Length: 256
Image 1 (cartoon, helix red, strand yellow):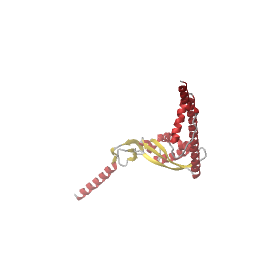
Image 2: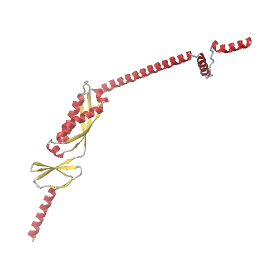
Image 3: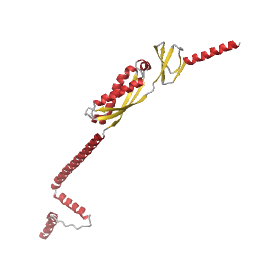
Image 4: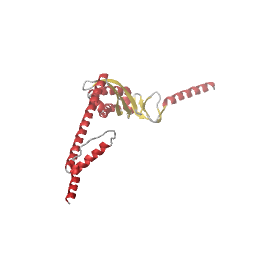
């Protein structure tokens, strides 16, 4: 009996070990790529899966979106400006079998591909394009990287140029350029204002010249504005035209 209980304990021990090596539980965002005697038989999961001990081997693959920070790269733009640029890449595995079979360490491979593509694309762009048309460059980077990682079963959803480090000399030159541009705009706006004001004055003079009464009213309005300042004495000539109607009226009365 003692020997039987010993054998039974050994058998139970081995059964537990076999079950522990045969049972796998995968989360909702995980897939298990199964190899049977070295041959790929497919991906399974999520949930509970059973493996054949010793025969089967499983590799876990996460299907969640990976946010990868691309290391800063030294880039020389098309107009010969030296920059240090880094970016961030958003991608996820869509075919777990290809991500394991087609490429070794797909995370590292995607990172290296992103670095080389970043240098290549930005090297073909000018500095002004990099600063002003960043959305266009991001789309071009995403398209190129996604096309190259598609055979690996990886989908690149977005690429963003995160930071552009300009040399101090270039920052000073750009500051001078921006200041000159602001001065140019200020002068243009001032000139346009003077031009519009002269047009309005010309139109007003044309209207007033057609009616002498309007000219007199404008003169009286100017006197009213001048008289509002009580801290000074103003001497102005009175046009004879203002008195002509009254003189004519008195003359007519005398004739009668």
